[in-house]
Structures are given as structure tokens and as C-alpha cells.
Length: 238
Ligand code: 6PG
Image (tube, rainbow, N blue to C red):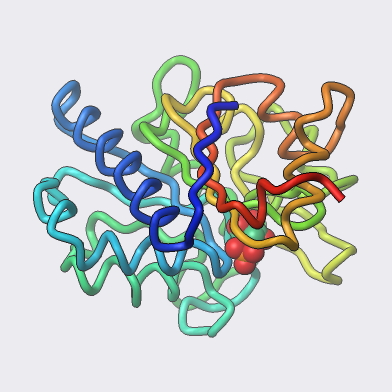
């Protein structure tokens, strides 16, 4: 884990944005395109707002960026819980990223969840290489229980190794979610986590224990990850 600790939320967002922009611009320089899988939830909102308004972000050729999602809730694109709606409002629209470069996991109108998973799986296969889809950057948040994307503890999608996208029943939330699966996270060129606040502190310390089996722990044990956290999250374990 390559951990960046910021004293204040504004520094945290700027540091994470710098990493995102650097990674995407290097991908564009190397291959003429940057494919990113975005995080949902609430923490990334400030990051997307920063990317949409900062001078640095205007240096990036967003026409070469294609935007996907790490996971999605089982709701229509117009629902307030939709990760796509959040990214559209805070990133795609402010940056005028064309719809042709944005790939929501849920169609409009919303289809059956397993059909949506199959559709996204096929979409990723269209540009996948021999190892499958290799994103240039995947941005994750982390839950208080150590989940990331919609890979929650003790859920079946944690063990999915054949498909890139899975429907994951999440009894903790009495719902089903769509999520990218471990092979996609493991083979991405870069993965970064953005976590803030003291509510994430216990999980942040727990996943660093070598014997942890929490979802985020399983990923950091398998590959390099960059972490952008504030002091409240990184502080001394309780
Ligand atoms: C989602 C996210 C999820 C999120 C964590 C942290 O769909 O909600 O993909 O994995 O990153 O739950 O959420 P917060 O940023 O709201 O704390």
C-alpha cells in the first residue's frame, strides 16, 4: 500500500486529484486513451467536483478519457442512489464529457440485473485484451466494513473469477448490487483508494493486518494500491 496522508480534506482531495490526472495523462501519452472505473458513494463527490473545476484538470484531454464504474446500485440512472447520476452531475456534465465516453452499468430504462451484468461484461470484452479488461485506473472508496466497490464481506462475488461483472447479493443492505470482480481490480494498471473520516479508521487499520480477509485487504495483499486518506482516517487505531 502506497499511503498518502493529508492533514485536511482539501489537501486530501487535491492530492488524490493530482494522482488521478497524472495517471490518466500518462495513459493517454502511452496509448492515446485512458479508461477509468469510477467509485460511487459520497467520498468521491468532492474529488469529482475538484476535477471538474480545477485548472489542472483542464490540462487533461478529457476527449481521450472513457469512464466506467466499479459498481452500481440496483436503481435506475435517475434515482438519487445511482452512482452514475452522481458522476454525471459532478463530473461528466461539468466537464462536458460526451455520453459516448460514459458507460453506466445500468441501462436506461433499467433492465433485469443479470441482463445488465451480461451487457456490461460484453461491453468490457469489446476492448479487453488476452487477460481481460485492463483499466488504466480504478478509483475505489472503502466502507466501514472494509468493502470496496460492491464487494462486501461474505458475499459470493468475492470469489467470482470467470466474469468481469457480477450481480452480488448484499444481505447486509438487503439488496443486490452490480460490481466489477477481483480479476479486473487485480489486473488494472493502477488502483487508488480515497477514504476520509474517523468512521473509516478501524477498517483502514484492519485491512493492513497481514491475516485480514476483509475485501479491501484481499486486494492490497494481491497488488500495489495507492491510498489517499486524511488524518482522521489514518489516526491511531482505536
Ligand atoms: C458505492 C461504492 C462503495 C463506496 C463505499 C464508501 O456504490 O457506494 O462503490 O464501495 O465506495 O461504500 O462509501 P462512502 O464514500 O459514501 O463512505
